[in-house]
Image 1: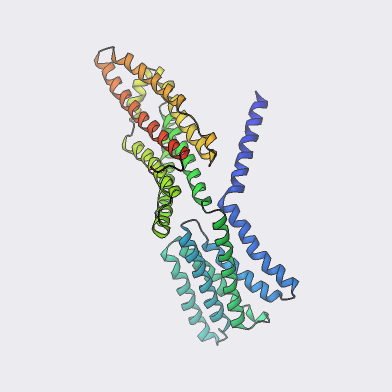
Image 2: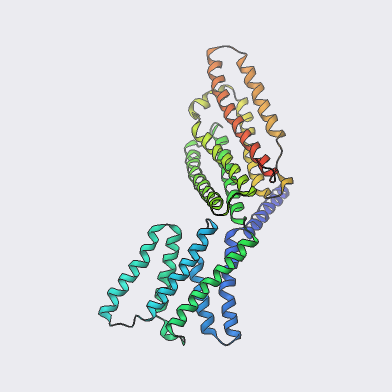
Length: 371
């Protein structure tokens, strides 16, 4: 048994390691490493280290704006960063002024660059790059290049990083979307698993409900991010079967969360009912945990359709609950009627979640069919 647990932990850790290597963060780290290293190596090889360093700085300062989001916004962000660091490096290189003039000019310039950050998260990263370029521009007197040459080379570094970003996107255009969907599947899986735990008597419900609310906020952020990315792609590049299918999958995930929010469970009343009918605890948890597990399997299946889970177990779990509810309904009294109505409502909610999960699997299993 201990050996089995050990092997299971190794398998989980290995799977997480592979997911890390496939992640957008790891890809960006590789890209930044290439963007920074290549100019320096070429500068050393051709005995032009100053040029290599200037291009390296430009690429490094443009990289923060390559944050997650739509491809169009990434390109605009990188170009804006490159333009900003060129202007800042040019101005900063010529700020050889008396101290009583330099301080107010520097304050105004710093405020202007920092003010860019009020326009959003990506804008704040662009602002950070501009401020960093301003600080380092004061070290220009230590370099052999002219100020305008240094500024233009810094801009070239930004364009060099943009080229790498465009090439990487052409190689792996759907990588970030797939990663965000995987995170959404896993968060939804955890959300539904906690919902299953909450019907079990004796657990710390306030703690679980607090965790549930945090997951709900995270899911809403993921849904908004996916919605923005997919809709902006449709507006800029037109319709595609892949993005249309992903929008439909997103619609099912959003509906899963909305149904859960729209149909809250009164756990105090439910605990009383389940205490008198304990067989339903295991039956409902079995179904809820299977739905949660299948979402996790979908997350790790990726584009491999063979790894998608089947519907058989879900249908059996639904039938088991339905038969027990039918038995309860056949015992007519006020107490059983109240329990029947509450359990029937919970059953219908779970049935809706199963149907949504089946739709997700169908969409993922038929990527070339038009919906």
